[in-house]
Length: 203
Ligand SMILES: Nc1ncnc2c1ncn2[C@@H]1O[C@H](COP(=O)(O)OP(=O)(O)OP(=O)(O)O)[C@@H](O)[C@H]1O
Ligand SMILES: Nc1nc2c(ncn2[C@@H]2O[C@H](COP(=O)(O)O)[C@@H](O)[C@H]2O)c(=O)[nH]1
Image (tube, rainbow, N blue to C red):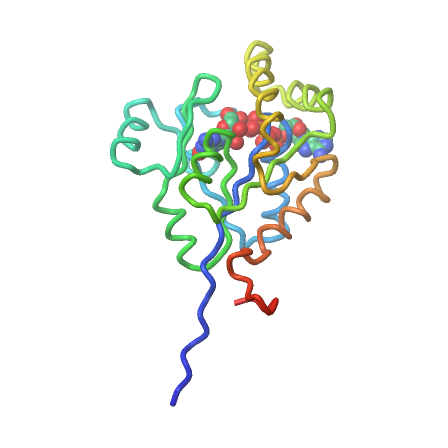
């Protein structure tokens, strides 16, 4: 009798969160460079593009009416208002990706991370932390993508985000991009604890 084909374990969704300016985008870019198989969701946002940002690559840049439509059609896995703009994860591409059994990564803020956890208890929540508060302030200012008033608004939110780090499964300190990327690659490729047999063998 022919044996059944080996079953692919369902892929695990990983969420990377952390305060604005901590280096989420930088670390994710390094992960993609080292591990091109990783798939990163492209969010929808009502924020205006920064110089160099490309629609459909960095974000799907949409207006308020389109964002309302996405919500009404249940097209978002999660969404949140952050510093005066809305951001959300299109649900269909995430479902399609997870169905292939390959790792999927969301780079989103705290409210969205909480929504993902509420919908998917198996999701892995990773918090990217700065080495210090002063380093976070200087990274955000050094990026120079927001005027000082917007930086202040983001830093006020960052205080609450740092207080939430205990809600996450893992905290990775971004003191060094290469090391933080290594840690994230390890987490993305680790089997879900739900798919480890009691003997220790992985399904
Ligand atoms: N380990 C690091 N050491 C020094 N500088 C860093 C490090 N990681 C990132 N940076 C710098 O910090 C700035 C902010 O990084 P990045 O834009 O990746 O942050 P982010 O968390 O994605 O921010 P946001 O949530 O606002 O999009 C960039 O100028 C980046 O080059
Ligand atoms: N809840 C969600 N947050 C998201 C999503 N995409 C990005 N983000 C987060 O928003 C802030 C600001 O981003 P920026 O590009 O304006 O600096 C940052 O924390 C992102 O991680 C999303 O789909 N949902």
